[in-house]
Image (tube, rainbow, N blue to C red; front, side):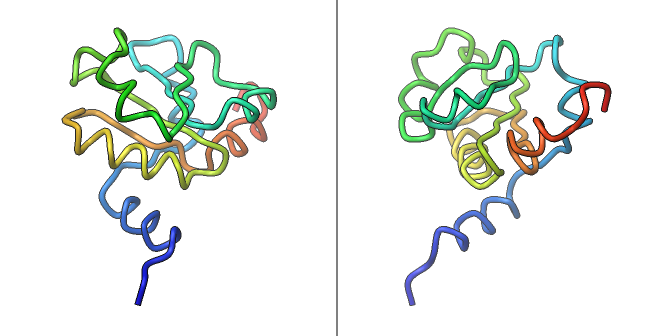
Length: 118
């Protein structure tokens, strides 16, 4: 039987670390790099300030050429709209050798639904 996208996301989430919105917000402004893996039309909904915008479909190629990602030990928080693509992206970045990758649980929808002081 063929696997579904949901099967792949579930498997990725079993291998990666997810963090909550409050945990992620505590990392803003520090050394952590946020990566928005949504597609360009989704960026109009907002983004985490200072996040790199790298669509999921080109992540593997851009990770190799992006100056901010030259150090594979740099802390990363990956997010998408709701958490599926970011889980897959976090898994992929781990496979590429990045050692400190987390996925934002609930994605940008969860981020934007929390009050600014949350």
